[in-house]
Image 1 (cartoon, rainbow, N blue to C red):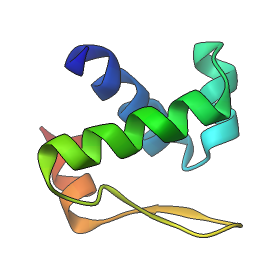
Image 2 (image 1 turned 90 degrees about the vertical axis):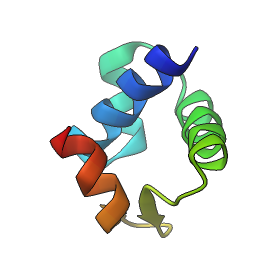
Image 3 (image 1 turned 180 degrees about the vertical axis):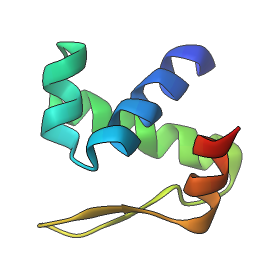
Image 4 (image 1 turned 135 degrees about the horizontal axis):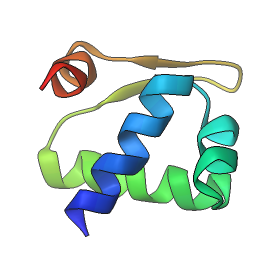
Amino acid sequence: MLYNDIALFTAVARHLNYSAAAKELRVTPSLISRRVSELEERLGVRLFERTTRQVRLTSEGRRLVDL
């Protein structure tokens, strides 16, 4: 399950948009949101700063992208 969550995370990081990532992966934006939130909870860090209009990587999220 973690592998799939990392794939979801990287798609969001690439697009900085849940809808675009969902379209790429052929899943719903709500699934992306839920799974990213679950991943953040398991890792104990915020990976994205989210507003209604924008998604940005946190410093921890950037570190994960760079791995």
